[in-house]
Every structure is written in C-alpha cells, then in structure tokens.
Image (cartoon, rainbow over all chains, first blue to last red):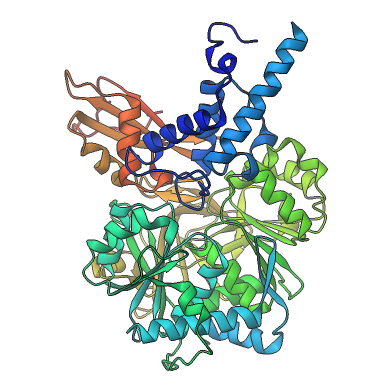
Length: 104
Length: 506
C-alpha cells in the first residue's frame, strides 16, 4: 500500500507531533497565519472551520498522513479538535501498520 | 402580537413542556422564558433602550434563542450574524445599523474584538462563555442574576423586531428590517400549512441567523413544539443519529443538506420513522432526489417551498401534488399573495415568464438606511398605496397557476442555499495587486447547488496561484463566499461593447 513515501506513516509520529502538524495546517489555512488553536477547543464552535472546512481538513489528513478517512469517520468524536484529530490519525496509522504486517 | 409574546404565552400554557433540546439536554418553555427575561434585565441595566440594535454573533444554541427573546423583551432589535462571518463584514454591519450592543460567543473573540473596536456605536459587549478579563460582561452573569426585573418597553407590532443582512446584487449587504408583525405573520402561516402541533419535534440545523432557521424557533414558540438545536451539519452522521434518538418529526433543509444525507452510507441503518415531513427551500430540490429521499424517510411528506429574507416565505407545493407538479414550488402560503408580473407590469398569463411579486403582512419594512434600494423592490401595486415586493426572481406558472422558478433577473446565484452576489466577491479579489481581471460565476455542483467559481486573469509577470486567491478571500469574506474553484486564465471573453461576457462561462 505505502510506496514512495513510507516516511510519514512508517516513522509513526507521536500524537503530540501529529497535533503540531495539524495545528500548523489549521493556522496556515484557516486562520491565515494569525492566532492559534488549542488542543481541546471545538473547531466548529470556535469558528475555526465550517462544514466545508471539515471536508478540506479530511482531504489534508488523507494526503499528509497517508490514511483513509471514510464517511463514517466524519464525526465530532474524531475530528472536532486538534487532540481528537491526533488520536484519530494515530489510531488509523496503527491500524494500517498492523494491516501491512499481516499482509507482508 | 409581539414575537416574545409567543414564548410568554407558551410558557404560561405549558411551562414544563420541552422547548429546546441541545447537547442531550432538554430545556422547558418556563426555563427559556425566565432566561430571556434575565437577559432583558441585564441589557436594560447595561443601558439598552427601546429600538436600539443588538447584534447576536453566535452559532445555533440555547443561549442564542434566549438572547433573541431577551433582546425583544428589553425593547431592542436583534441583528443576527452567522458565526461564519469575519471581522470586516461584522464591522460593516455594526456601523451600518449603528449597533449599541453585541452578544457574541467568546470563542469568536478573534473576529468580534477587532470589529467592535472599529464600531464607535457599540457601548456594551456581552460574551457567551468565558470572560477573558475581570471587567468583561458575560451572558452567564445575566443568566445567574436573581429574578428578572426588566421594564416592559411597551412596543406595538409594527415596531422593528429584527434586522437580517442579505447579499444585494450591488455587492453591498443590505439589512432587511422585519417587524414583530412580519415575523408573527410568517410563523402563523408556516405553522398552518405544515400543520404543526405541540407534539412536533423539529430539527434546527440551518442557521437561526437567517429567516429559514429563525422561523423554526418562532413557530415552536407559537405552537409549543420542541426544537432540536444543531449548530452545523459538518458531522452529518452524528446529527442524523441525534435526530433518530430524539424522535424528530420535522426536518427543514436545503438541497445541499439533503444531498449530504443521501450520501451517508449508514443512513438506512437509522430509524427515521418518526419524521413526518421534510421541507426544502433556498434552492430547487433536484427532482431526482425526491424518490431517494422518500426511500430514506418513508413516512415523510416532502414540502418544496420558496422564500426570501424580505418576506421569509412566499410559496409551497402541497406534497400531494409532488408527483404531478415536479419542479414547482406550488402556490402562495396562507395569507400571502404571490404572482408573476411581466416587464410591462401586468399579470402574466400561464407560461409567460416574469418577475414574482409578493404582497402580505410578512413583507419587510425596507432595507435599513437604504431608501433607494427599498424603493426599487417595494413598489406600488394595483392601488398606488399598496406595497408589492419585487423578488428579483423570474417565474412562470402552468395552466393551474402553479409557480415554477425560472432564473434571476441579475447574476445573483445561491450556494448551499445562501445568496451570492458575484460583484461582492469580485470586489474583494480585485483588491489583490496581482489581479488584472476577475469574474465570479456559479457553476452547478452536486452538494452546493451552485459552487462559487472565480476566473482570474493575473497581471503580466505577476506570480499568482489558486491558493493565494482563496486565502485572500478567506480573510475577507464569510466562508460560503470563498470560491470553491479558482481558475487562472490569460484573458476573459468580451461583448462587442467591451464588457466581460459572463454567459457561457464555465
């Protein structure tokens, strides 16, 4: 499954590292480089992203962390704060990693 | 009848019935009535007097509903703003209608604080949520205060109740002034044709900052039903699970919301049998979606409706006629007259295309501070003193006088159910130094209805990319106006007179 860029999933970033990357992405793309996003604030209630933004965020997570965000992953429990996103990405990567090993 | 009297009457009639459900908690009519009275007391002691404008910058929430009614009890006029607004737009609105006080979610401080600094009329800011400094006033302070003691302001039903800003074709937002009578007339008419009762549970996902969402709350206050409050549809499966759990009976939506529901893979696993009706407005529901929606919501009747901020709602199709009048929005709602006039001003014959006009007690007072724009849309009718609302929407009727939307008389289009004035977005993109020319159009889009597309011609030698245009727009426009598509071209097509030719662009 993983080909040219094994680095991101292979290196298995820690949750704080994932959180930092997601925070940078949110600040750059939604806050235009100004302000910050705390770990636990609701992205929707704080107005950081809206429903279109959540879809953009999912596309970013898929591309950057080499995971698949399925339709039933699109829930507040997985995606509505930096901390939740980091946990979600880590779980997805762990699941994909064990899948690779099983396949290998 | 005054709008807040709807709530007061329901609270007297059935104090312990549930009015609002939010975050799994139920709030009774008595509780919301008491909360709004405390907010009225807080606003009056903060210096708010009859007729002053109070901006509400909050997502759908219990606090927004309490604030709406609290402002009215204090004699104020609410000015609703979607939380997806930004500092520029908010500052414009605060200055345009000379807002005296702002009630805002503390999470929106980064947007609200700069806007308030630019607005000299704002004397009081009330935060919903955490105070950032000791001197900050919070809504929670108001709500925790002992029993309410506000002075009834002694309003009458032709007083202003609210101002809702809408995009104008000129690109400058216009404040639609709605009186207590306007809002109560709409609530009564809607409750009548939807046959709402106190047993209904209506899901309010659409923003209460616009007429469609606002009326879900006002009709609830009128008939005594419960409203399930959702602040967005970003996580559709979560919302649909709550709709199932709370036994929702009415689901108002727009085409993009219904398209999203149809794309949820697990939707068939949810028990949605409590839903007895769906309503669609803001844009035409694709005819192909109707049988698919009927399969998901097998007990629901589907109401296809038409409305605009200036009169809230104007027409609906009787669900019994859905099969034989596909694509129609039916006929005028109760106590409203809606008909098509030709460019010469006479009533159109069946099949003839003209502008839809609306008359009735829900038609707005006018646009705040814009007499010229008001006179352009509120014109004399059959008798000179009558006020006919010219909608700017082209319609025709069939032989049975059922109404069909044809198009706009200008280049305004709708995305996710909200009006888009291309001029407004073009003006913002023209601020970029590297832009030589830009044209904004709506392109058909499965979810959004129409998606905003900007076609940009960069200045020779300028470095410009799609991302730069989008980020620039995101800083200056509400998110629904940020182009979903940006295309760079070397030139735009022109008419013989040299104007940019929009027709045929995709």
